[in-house]
Image 1: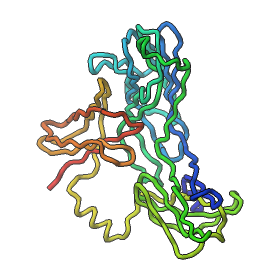
Image 2: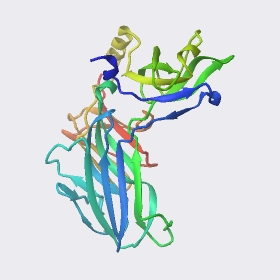
Image 3: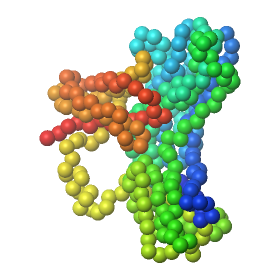
Image 4: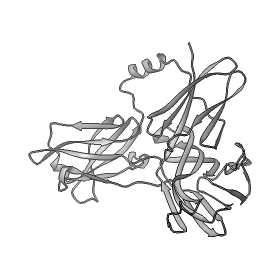
Length: 337
């Protein structure tokens, strides 16, 4: 199998003929939510996981529209109503079997209100996502949120259509922000992505045949790469392919990072509960051990951090969701001496 078959192609194209070498991205949506108002206070929601070569596992624990004036619901097999916080907090999976990678969960809920609006980040999903091997194969627990229709009072109704489809890209595309051009010659580019990476720059004259130009490291959130060689001979169009995720500059640097760490290896999340504007994260623990739980955006930017000393073999940490993110993760590590 050649190297091209090992790569996940995340392509953004830049052209000299565009001012400043601006680029357009080809994204790959991974999650879809379809919501319908069907009348008499009933709302139907379909949560779908879509094909995305960057993601090999998606497991959904809870689906939670920020519903008001809840009356009743119709749940699919193996899903039950969740009343963790006193009110209705959506539906939870019974963990009876592994979920298929391409999945659809459809459920309905009824409100005493017959008015509705489009709500930004109105449906939350507690998820576990494992990335493809080329992205390190890491698993992350957290949540995603997508726009949906929600019941409301007559004064909040916004005249939205009774049908709405929202999609989310879990692993964003590499984006070329601009080409570096001097005297009509291309000498490099600036690009952005969420993780440290190794990328390959390719050029083309016709958008069909691509020639490798160079491989280099990238650091989030943005990297500028330049050379002293004019790249015009490779064509007018350029794209980036992801070759590997999470590089180490040298073996010595890798060893230094590992030996200098004050944390244990990452600890998996055992459970998440979403409701009342909060999320409760649970994990297996050792009594008297100290843990650090980081709530962060998918890009890695920290939202908040909490330290807690465990009192038994299972620990829960509560975070206010605050401003909803389209995707957020929780990272748990034990502090060690």
